[in-house]
Image 1 (tube, rainbow, N blue to C red):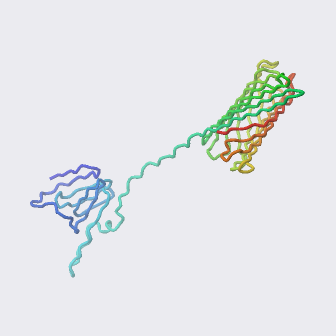
Image 2 (image 1 turned 120 degrees about the vertical axis):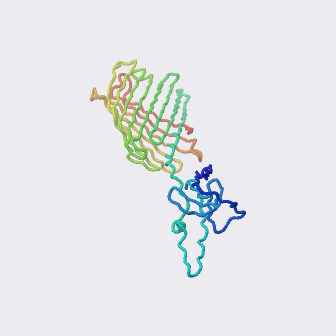
Image 3 (image 1 turned 90 degrees about the horizontal axis):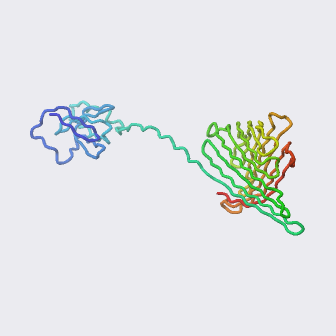
Length: 335
């Protein structure tokens, strides 16, 4: 007869002659082998053959059953019978295999690549103000907002600032500046990267109403430690001024650096600068630099005191001053 048993064990039975009068044993016979399926069911009989793919069990009721190894959880072989003295018997079938490790090796799963860590957003808001009254009434306001998005291979930053100063009711400073920058590393742990950045500048006391610029190039992280970083970059770009005497698109080269260092658990120093020589006029260039000292005011570092200075130099400012220097003290909220 042909017998099929459904289930994860994928069992197929070989044809066998009916065994009249044979009933399933009421208790497990210690002389029989026991096969436990992955479904928890057990079969008893004699393991008469096995290979890497199948196990053949001689069941006292069902006859020979062929089991696939993927459906078998374990095999418990009965101890070999002790032959009478003087009548040695041959070793049971596959005795050598029985003494080996019979645990079923499941097919190796395809390796799961780790998910890329999510991007992390951070930012800071600064606000500073001072004033004086008496012989002259002066007021100065400084505000800045910066956001940063860090991913394993890229960094995006956007920093904007605004300054307003008056003296006896007359405006002496009214300036807005914004710069957005995208940087992409060539390898997650590498030092080389490429970048693209753009800036917008509005200054009431410059020889233009609006200045737009865009540039790109390559960068190199010269120092990368937990306390200190130094990045160098170079490239080229172009700028255009609106509302001034020169509204042409002026190309320029770009060389810059950014440095940061944590002096201790509460105090950190940062500095950076850019040099932009004109490519169409060798005598003209712009220079911008900034340095700041941040002191954490609480344990989490979310509240800081920032002392800084900024310097901007333009070799051809028109009727305006060539050099502008700004000093500031501000309270920073980091998020």
